[in-house]
Amino acid sequence: MDAVSSTDPAAGPPQRRAWVEHIMGMPVSIHLRGTGVDEVPAQQAVAEAFRVLREMDSVFSTYRPDSDLMRLRREEVGITQCSPLVEESLRIGQEAEVLTRGAFTTLLPTGEGDLAFDPTGLVKGWAVDLASAPLTALRDISFCINAGGDILVGAHPDLPSSGPGEISWRVGVEDPSDRSRIATTLTLSRGAVATSGTAARGAHLYDPAAGELVGRPGSVTVTGPTLLWADIWATALFVGGPATQEAFAASATDYRATAL
Image (cartoon, one colour):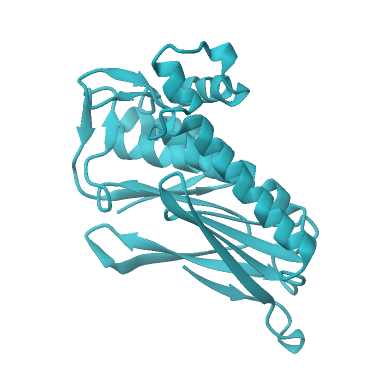
């Protein structure tokens, strides 16, 4: 990912700073551009964003036996004894299943031949959206969060979305047939970019209709206002069929999809 700025050349390029932590089993980087990126409010906002991501990991990780999700799956606790985020993830998953005509599900294979509640497919995008809140409050600063290749770009409401003063980010979309090549480049000052496919992790996306993991080559990239729904739709469009495509066209009018 590269970043470009369309700010007034006479004012010089905006300041830039980046932070990286390993959370949810992947590198997550936060990039700030603008005025005051080295000041205390910016550092506090970044720290709070990472705290939110760590909290989401502590609730939903399938690799941590003490997470709320795993304790729920072992029936050690009921859903009312878990973080309220768990019940909210169930609601979001049910909504996504309806909207995508069944192509998205939170019932996923466990590796033991059965299915279990696993909202992994929505948690990353949702977590990044939640983590962006303190960054959006930073005046004169634009941010970009990169979570394992999925991107959320945003800025304080007073920062222009175009013209003088705009700070834009250029996001490269990987070619699934040649991961060393960038297939296309997107430029945005606000919005999300999510890609689902098999190039990086192989057959890991579950098709509920077929009851199996999808191993075909290719990818689907979805852009739109939130990373939560961009990620959900990218997964659904990759595993789903014509009914899911029709549902996307009818109900996700703020989102755009590109298949490679």
